[in-house]
Length: 195
DNA sequence: CGGCCGATCCACT
DNA sequence: GTGGATCGGCCGA
Image (cartoon, rainbow, N blue to C red):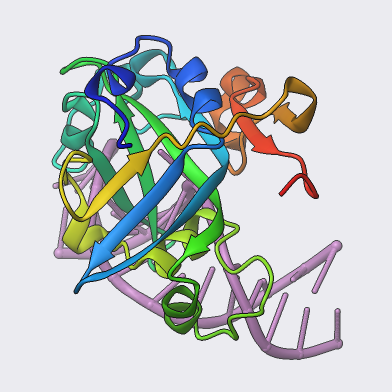
């Protein structure tokens, strides 16, 4: 079943990020569903987090989406060519977000492979934040600000749980310029081999 | 308006 | 292990 609104409203974005491991992420465009199990996430803790786009309470056209109510998609362009998909959490005006960094394909594998221009038997064709969005067909120009309660992009809880021993925790990727905040253990991923 | 830079990926060495 | 691709957002002038 789809994740309830209450899940997205939780105040602890780090707990939310950890909790999203094992949840399912789906997209449905042009009638075809693609998606799978979330295997890697990172928490971005809003105004007090130097690695967050909303650090210091910055509000711009781009970051405005992060101030939406939890349960909204924040999709932005990275390095000029990759759409990165985030789940906005917490109540309106608190710009928390969870970056989805890895997906284990479960449905629509053929279409996902086709979008990636890879063979369906390929491994790891949705294993990074950029490739994951390509595989799911998510694009910053089309899907930023979309509600996760809608028919195009949504998350489901299928009662898959990981043991603490199956989860790795560590510092986030690509945030070296965030000073002390770059060291925070806000990255969570399912150990290789578990799935 | 100009310049810098980024929550990345892949081909190539 | 390294560097190029590629362009919107942001900031300072």
